[in-house]
Image (tube, rainbow, N blue to C red; front, side, top):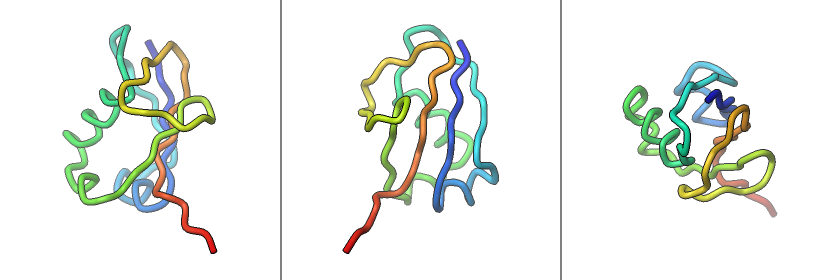
Length: 79
């Protein structure tokens, strides 16, 4: 299946792209995306990140479907 991953903040700088497409096995989870990223960009481990799946906050255990959109972004600070 294909999953589209969007990057924001420091993660975007580390990856060097604002979006990438990944091919994953069926029944993949958000945690699988993180694992792939850590294998290719270990410096991501130092970053605090949140995930959204199709524009809603996501957890590591959320299951992915074909053509889902996953966003990875830093926590939002407000005041």
